[in-house]
Image 1: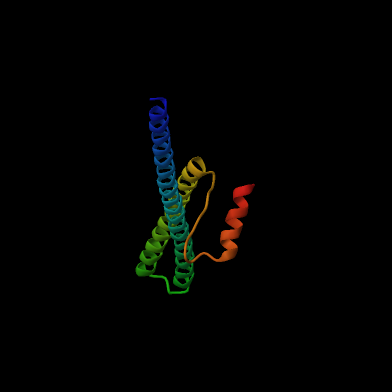
Image 2: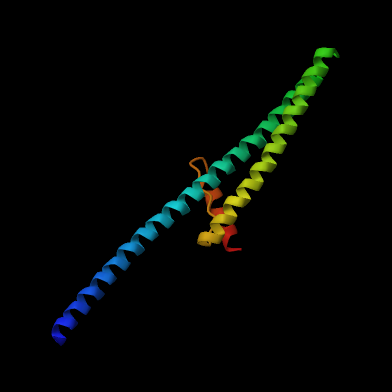
Length: 135
């Protein structure tokens, strides 16, 4: 009878261990997926933020070129629209900066990292981000 109980206990222990290992592997896979997705979201926000910055610079160039035109009502109307577009680009950049901070904060809280991944990031940009993680 004791041998039977020992065998049953061993089987239950082994099954529990196998289940725990399987569950742990699934958890690690899920965590890796979430961590990589957050890094990708951060990368997309980073790229959008960069695009908003470039947009603002293009509005500045358009404004400077418009100043060279003769004075007219059309010129003033164009300058007004350029100004509004430039301010929208700056506002978008600020909102994207806040969103990037939220995503990085979520990463830091969940995984202890604040990785940004985007196909258009150079190795230097990724390294500088990783270095800023350790500081």
